[in-house]
Figure 1: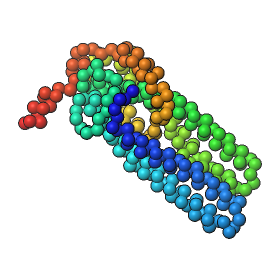
Figure 2: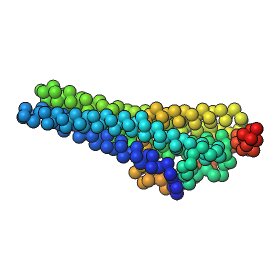
Figure 3: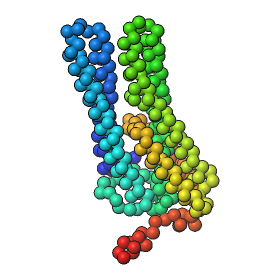
Figure 4: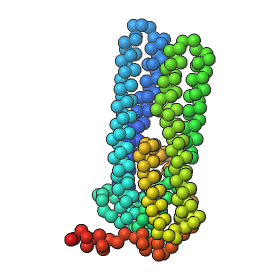
Length: 271
């Protein structure tokens, strides 16, 4: 467990704004349905509430995905490089976020750190992706039921808009796809570090490729992992990771090639 994480507030703000956007999304469902049954004298008031909720949802959702998510991932990526390569590119500090201090700053350590990130991510997503499947299935049942039972097509249209929106069905699909792709990357890291082991310098290129694939995947998916699930299972998963990293096999010759030579870097900077 991380003892110090100055990057966490970036994610806390992101989670807060994302939660607000989801509340506004579901709140907008109420005036949308109320508009169908409320007296005509109430329509203007109900419309104003629907408009406020819609604008609030779009604004907070856009702000979270375009601005806050980028900032949080950028700072986390800087810390990842600091810990992996022994560079100093951020003033924010973390302690105990990674558990691979037996490796010197190197491409190898960067790969092991990413392997650890993916291990925790895939275990988190195994739980949340299942929940998203259930949520999407329930909404689909409600939608199908409404198509069969309601003669008023306006109700069906409203339910269709909510069911196939970015919060319900699309979000569920995005998270399931994300989980499957993270699982594939985990298998690739497991194969190169444990099943075959690092025995040739060319495998360093594979490590860099897998790390870049994971960072690109995170940026494109814009999927937050559940902090609650992480806290509940952190000790269990940390123990499993400790057992996994004991099996990592790395040739000493390749590890020496992969190390970052800070002396050479400093001499270059001085010239």
